[in-house]
Picture (cartoon, rainbow, N blue to C red):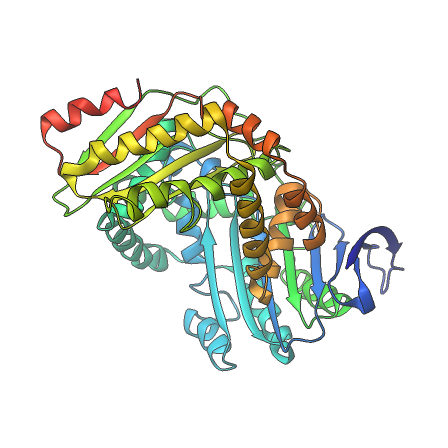
Length: 459
């Protein structure tokens, strides 16, 4: 059991350095699960969760920049930069970076999303100082050499090609474009072949300087970690690079430009010679800060979140029309998406879409019965806890929470919010979200007559 705490302590300055402010955000029993936060001079935030019973630790740095922060000509720059930060610093070559973590049996990686980027390393607890030094060095001291930019361009173009070769993945990018058009949220995280080819070393370097200052970063560590030691090591690493404070930091721009950009009733078909047709039918969802997101999570779970869900039972189990069928939600700062995915034979596209639309309409009109809601609450609660069983997941939770919400919620708090969802809550959010006019994206070898009939699904 954990409890909230807002205790704060101002640590006395040493060696003439400015004072850092430390808070205990969540207090665990006997220190287990305790979440602490220190804000360093210059605005860098360090958040940790302590689990003394494990022998591993995951250290990550979250940057408040994603593909939605790019202009059209910079599309793909955030992801490009993610690659380049692994290519070397003044202190380490690309080989040195990877070899340092490999030598202790650790793992290191990064990912870019539409609203944030994360770099992380998972190691034995005794090797945490090494992980902190390596990841901080990458984030603060990347050289971004012209030759590395050119070499990595080819790697990224191959990554784009790989994604385009996977229609089950590519259809989600197509759906974002269908729903949000030529806007930052509607463009692909990887960029396009044209935009990646057009990016220069100078433009990427300027992007790096603009977005990777301390006020835009959150440091997170979870596992067998000591908060005070992590703070000291992070502070030392940033000070050594001269990156702890910046006088020219660019304020984080508000993310509220998508509210008026939602589209409805659009159909986008990409003709590909694939064995299956890949479908996403969806509509505007909820922003990630919307209090109804808990009810939407329960709705999503019951509708298409598991083997007992309505869509899985109706489309796969009863009729055998698809192998993979599910629903999902995506929440952003100012808007969201709700979608249903299915992969099926091209000649069964209309049967599958009719079943999907029928289920959405039925739930919108009548809601879910109490048994379905209860089962979905149990499934969502269980998966939430099981998904936090390793230090990497815990680091993701506290880092993303600080970056996106500016607060921490304990597992008990999350379970309480899920358990508090009622059938009436689910019915209300279903009436709101599922009655919005949908849009449709399809990748596959559809004939002209088949494609023409797709507009009936979103009418």
